[in-house]
Length: 267
Image (cartoon, rainbow, N blue to C red; front, side, top):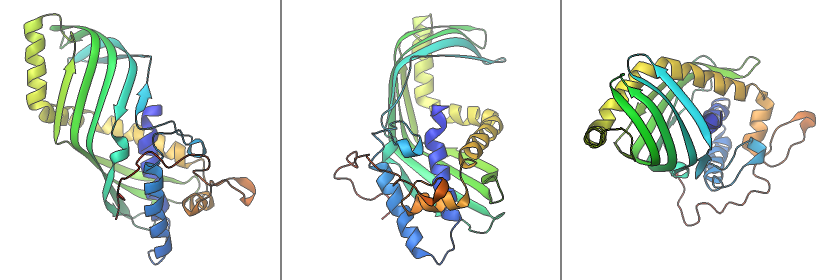
């Protein structure tokens, strides 16, 4: 799914680094350059990585549904979904072990992200509150970060094992027009989420973490499994990998004009 592309790319970059010997300082410098070149192009599709434009990240129209027993049961849709701020990512922690089987970690921070969309949502919360969602939806998130740890598997196919993901959130504010049928309850739920959203999401994450991590590990391994270790090294050195020893520069044809005037995220 397209929603997993950005996380796949971040994990792939981590794997690239962990494949290298610690003494190869030239490659460390190249990885820093790669991250900044990537950030500077995130407003455009990057064909050689198979990525759509990621800032803003656009979805829709689309349909969705959920039936989480005793919690939420709904069907809904989104249109003109736009998520902004992904290209402002920071990487304060990059501790990647080149020895297969030993743990590596990477932390990625997003100082400020927000989305806006048209939406519908019909169903219920806990089979008590009826959803009547139909209109504009928007939310902003401050100081969101995730800390990833994993172990590298270098045997074919290339991949990771023992993936763990910890999420941290500074603040959350939402506004979903006409979310609930009863106006007074709708106002109360918005106030509750905007006051206690961090704690509520932490509870949801604790409940769903195992399922999400398993799916993410599968997505990442499907992505990495397309490449050999040689391909990965060619990518980080400036090529795109591929058979026959020939490859195109990874950012060929993509202008680095998305973050003009911004400073390096890793300096």
